[in-house]
Image 1 (cartoon, rainbow, N blue to C red):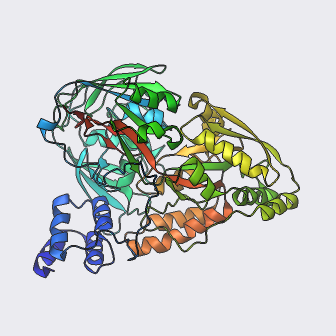
Image 2: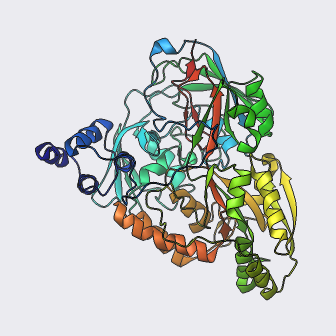
Image 3: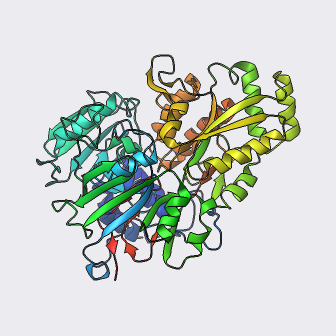
Length: 582
């Protein structure tokens, strides 16, 4: 260990960064987790490289607690994605200038409102043009995007972002701190209402923004990154409710040219993009509600890439030597929701029914049969095993058919008949069929209503501005399955689906849970976060407003002659450095 170099580097950063450096130097944090956490705190790649060199390196395969990190389960023919999805672009000689990249994608399930969009079909077309302060780095790490750097104060309650100079809007004019202040101000009344107020954000100068949080949050940069899709940067005069297709703009590598919700969207390259002139002459996004159609399009040369697909439809992709398949182990999951505020699943008897459902499903069988082994088991909370602070000591719920039957009897509803609603999205219809079959074993009679994503989300949250506590999502059905994509941190799940009403289809309200989430978000080091997450997991598990059977590996595929795509596992494809090889 080069102690003099280490001391010099530590003098250049703040207290939170020094705590992380000390933990890494002492062997309490793996190299991988040091890189992820360092990126969130705003340490540059060069600084982290120097720190790793000063410390002499470490075993990259160790988990933060010194045990082997859990492996993603995959079938023999699956191709694992490289960790470095934000690696430098291949040399220009390997990618040809020109060509149009055709991307098969889920049809948008809602209008293209950058602030209010809620599904991967909407994310995909919007993020080709609108960008974030922080981008996707290696693995779960963050990387500079519109912000070149960022740093917290001593307790993580104030974050300062230094913006990239020379960024231009597609419609003309410079991207400045005024745009960030306005964009975050709009989000303060919506997506980021739990983190900031309209007065929280101020411009220090044209390229510096200071964000004062309502509560300290050691992971706030994730909330202004692609892992919080609604937090893209929009122009200062962009009003709430403005739709991207009606007023296209952005700072990204591609400019929207045409849009038709029935067929797709086309883009032309932004030759003034801050990242350089794209290789591609254009992008074409091809919409379809049917995953098999998207896959057949790739195999039949009608598409060059499929942004996300279910393993149940994909044997031909795994067995095709002209296709690259990436499997991203993450925190994406399917959530079985219950309305716990009123109706069948409310009150003391409702709690028994919810527990019966949790005990009635066979989670490992779902992973084996629906995901073909590509996923991690869920325990009715959204903290995935992939997170470094996941509490593995919590007992895993196991199937118990007899106990589940007894609970239905105690609740007075043996043979409960009810409709389960689900979107026709990837593997979810198959999951719904298996859940229906498994719960038949405990006496439940479930009728399935599987429908297009174009109409399903009204079943989930019919209105988003209800004033009935918890204010926000309301008017949906009382029982169903909904999709949640991968996030680099669970904060968005915890806040939007549990602690506020924004996506809270369960209408769950718990001050104890909300307090536990705030305590977790205020942590700034790994040991504290590991302790703080325990009550979050336990309360969510015990109250059970949702059953979360598994966390799935996100699958994406593209032709062998396509390189340079960056995928987040959340419906984002970044193609500014992508192109075709010879």
